[in-house]
Length: 578
Image (cartoon, rainbow, N blue to C red; front, side, top):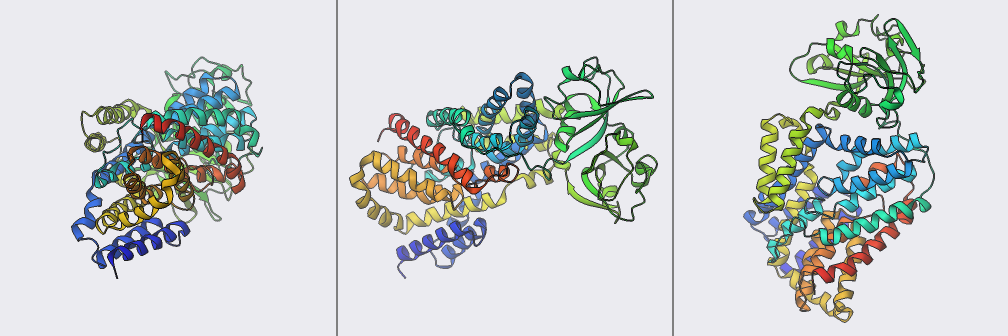
């Protein structure tokens, strides 16, 4: 079979598989790469070159650096700080959305949404706002911020990495900001003033992701809570924790009033999600005495375990059951669906209770059949003492790469090496932070782009397209490519859509005598901004908790997509002339 016909046939098959997801996208990409090798369309050196490319190494390093920031609690701290500054629900929500867009310009959209999800959900709950009015804007704000810098989304990096093979310059670090910032500003205004009128009013369903626990936490010397009232502490408003009781000496005050003044040594029984309790321990100077008494060495894990029938804990308090001595681990908190208003230390364990347990890896593995591990939350723990160093490494890599002092790939790889050497992250967690399906997809599609050019298929296809699109003129061509890219991002991944459209756009622009740059920028913006369906990972994170329907995204996302389209068409030709 003619090589051009063969690669166009493979191209169509890959499009169908990407769109239907009959196979995972990385498996489809590997299958495509295998076909290119078996049919002799690429040499092994050409096929595997993508796996060692700057783009792949930069992507992997950025995944790891984002995890370093999460482990240090940096993004979570930003959310809590913003919540403290505003006293109105509307102002708090708008401030958070603006911050989400800003943070997302430098970190993964999905990670940003995941970290801010409990912050925004808690804010909505305390302010009496329906969660559905806040969670979709959260996801959309994270997507809007991704178009501001080169590292804002993996799609931007993928496009930039693919450009040299087509004879084009890679994207500059802040090149996209010329269009990304206006798109983000207009998009945020839409989320502030229009989206609330279109969004349904539904309460959140956060039982699984934000399971409420009871925990006993003691005010340590030097704590930010020492000497302040509960109202002044912001435990509920800013940290999402409800104070159920306060024990001072032998006296216990249940449901203490907002004017109750806290003192060093007070033990607070608080209720809140896992993330809020862990964050409070790090930022407020409150400690779990059971955790302090536990002597562990080596690998320490944090897990959720459920109490099963037949457990020797049943009917006893944790102290009566001598949990720490029996299992060599400490219970930080307890979750019970029908919570009783009393201190954690007085609760008698029942079947189905979920315990938040911390201890050495060996002791966790030996908990026994009557305590079943539901999930490992070790990676959710954050340590703000490491935050300055984590921010320094991340900001240093971004500045050195953005200013051109070092190639971006070199800067982020060095930052990862330093993070590992300084033990900000373990090697195992670093490998786990990398989204390997994205890495495989990008490497394989870079190889496909090479074959697409080498066989002449790109020339044939763009020649046909140029004949059809020439009457539209440059603005019409930009609009058509933008719309097609947006359409492709709905059924397939953003990266795949961008890599499919890129050679077609460049080839068509050249055939019609236009500069390819504005069309490259248009495709990048279109591929990075996917709002019409909930298939974008950031949107999937809020889809369930916000109790949204598919049509909710269509109704709200269509308007935002149209605004993005209009702003892009107005700005792109002015900055990057045809």
